[in-house]
Length: 251
Image (cartoon, rainbow, N blue to C red; front, side, top):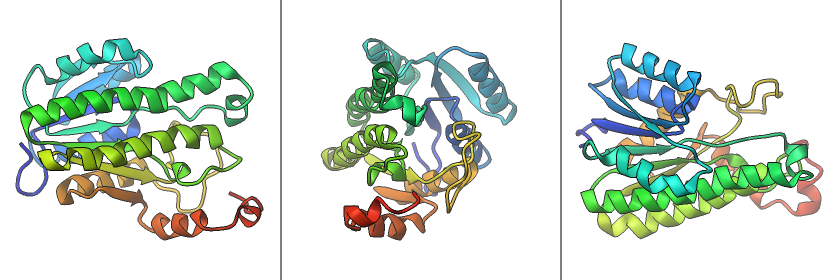
């Protein structure tokens, strides 16, 4: 169960090699003993993530998980819950990809859509079923400010995350009567492995800062949060700009 100050006993990381996911686990591990279920594809990065978490005192269970292999998701999620209740599930997997290639190459576009949207919906349905059955828990889905209004620079990525955002926002309402909490976190530009080599956008943040937002979302049972918080009024203003003006902005 989640304790009185919002710290879980068990944390499920779907996309367990995500820097934001690992920063979230590290933050929780510094507060109380933590069981982490690390769900990701087998790789050296997953091995390194497990070793790092164990050095921080976590009890770590590893589950093979591939976001695009939706046929395997039912068994993977069942394995995640086989050892007992899960307090917080973090949906942290995703691809940014080459944005110019994404709208000119069908395979690249489909890969982004299957990973960021289809995979996220698949696990969302399965997590909802499990958490309703156990009667408690939180799901936190990592969206992005790019989901709030399509931009020429990354509209394929933004569109896939917009689908994720809409699904988990709706899931918030669907699960409310059951007592299960769902939160959507919308980071801006995160300085991470995913964005390496790209020019940082204004209000750029770090995985550790986003992790702090995630922990706050769980503790206060927030339904939406931006990382950093000033992005909320910025994106609200951008959403309402007329298209002829919006397309002239260097965003």
